[in-house]
Amino acid sequence: MCGIFGYIGDNKNPLHACLDGLAQLEYRGYDSTGIAGIQDGHLIVCKKEGKLANLQNILTLKTLEVAIGHTRWATHGKVNDLNAHPHLDTMHSLAIVHNGIIENYDALKAQLKNEGAAFVTETDSEVIAHLIAKHYEGDLLKAVQTALPFLHGSYAIALIHKDHPDQIIAAAHHCPLAIGTNDAQTESIISSDPNALVGGFLKILFLRNAEIARIEKGNVQVFDSHGNLIVKTQERLECAAKAPSKDGFEHFLLKEIFEQPITIRKAMLGRFSSETAKVEFDDLKITAEEARNYKQVWFLGCGTSSLAGSIGAMYLEETAKIPAFSEIASEARYRTELIGPETLIIAISQSGETADTLTAMRAFKAKGCRTIAICNVKNSTLTREADYSIDLQAGPEISVCSSKAFTSQIAILALFALHLANLRNTTSAEALDLARAMPFIANQIQTVLEKAPQLEKIAKKYAHFDDFFFMGRRYMFTTCLEAALKLKEISYVNANGYAGGELKHGPIALISPTFPVICFCANKKTEEKIISNLMEVKARGAPIVAFAPDSMTQIHSIADDLFTLPTTIDPLAPFASAVAGQLFAYYIAKERGCDIDRPRHLAKSVTVE
Ligand code: M6R
Image (tube, rainbow, N blue to C red; front, side, top):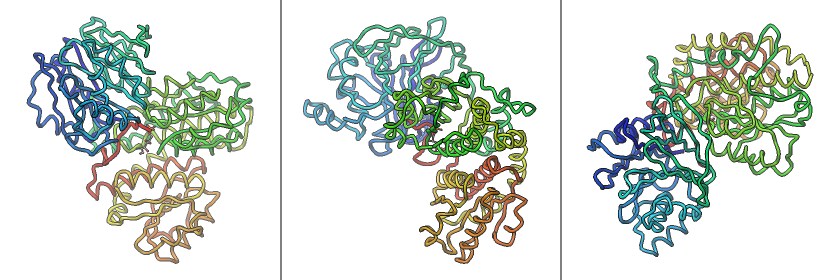
């Protein structure tokens, strides 16, 4: 995580360009923000704990000749002003901003301290400043080239030096960094996320594999780790200014929850024909032979994206009749030993920058697997590195808490399952049912959204509880995990999610009148079993909130509070149920006065492992 930004050029005041860039990057972390720049031969630094607004409140600077900025998601060192980036060398000649983790910082710090470097922060990043200063002999690029091989870990860095106001040096290794220049060659911009680059049409390149760039006004030179000049392909990108808007909603999360009938339609648009039940993905070029040769499919992802993968695995098994597994990316990367080209890898990520997902995908790629990225950000690292990618087409998701990305992910996964079933010639009854029911998802979500006030009422009643137990079976098990994650993330309350069948194997000991059970019931195949689980809970006095289909009459006499959902086939029940879970979490967080769009300790894009 962390976002870095830099500007050198004539078109804007670098200070303002940087502040605007940081505003776009704040989703990557908001523990602190900082800016460094050069003015009249002096290095100037301003940094502050908290969100960008805190920095802007104390900023007295008016202009800078060149500027770099940083928005932090803390890894090493407390969240405070001191540990905020940029970091300086002992002589205060140079300033660096860093995204990533320097794994050997402790050893480097000890050595540099011995050599006289004066460390002032608890961060790993500060060693980079001292290390480069140690190797600086008048040529900034050379100093960086000499210093980088000593760093173990991941980094994207940007660096300025008071004696070189005409350049920014940048380097990246396993962390994203885009550099853009305009056609008139009057400005250069660097950013952790190309979508934060604003400036009409820009030519963009991405640094990778310890590449180092010398960035001047409208001009970029890139060198490999041995110092050889390399020619990088540049992409032309329209970087229009588009400040995200809440469109009248109180929070981005609420806006994004309410967008879902549209985003679901967009996910299917031009890909699915309800008349023919055929699916086409423009950029996916898997042949029937290739599809038949796969022995299994693995889904990789983290958090919500991983849960989407769990649902995707069920879709593939039921519909395309192929064994499928979903594994948390940070664990999957250690399970590649028995894997080879017969396994298809599907990496799911809203941002496309999640380090755990990227690392896992790379590990499977190295074993010869084909990879497909399902992602919401075009041009993200994941989409660039995967063999194929499928765009969610959900539009920017600003709230840290994922909502519309999840439902779009599972919509795409349902379509992908149909596609693979076609290619493998496995026309199952399940595939036909799925194809028939898909067109109704958006309306079912709409029905839930129209009943939001009812969910708000239920949420208010339960908002004072500090512990919740979420339960469901089969498709509703994954859905309950997702709903529990939402609640934890934005309300800071303890919310455990369990498969209903597991209740008797331990967690039932927790059940008490002060421990509400939130039960997701919309899985027809397991209806009787989940009712039995609820009876076990009821016998022990826990309040029960049920999210159940309108066809489930028995639930009325069991639940203390009931939210009814439109009835659909089991595989598609997660859509309406997940939206209800999102609203439930939202209204509890609101009632508890939490920072809904930017929950504490989190960031939208998690670029460290
Ligand atoms: O961008 P990604 O989908 O790769 O992010 C993965 C998780 O960090 C993310 O889904 C996280 O769990 C959400 N904040 C949950 O709402």
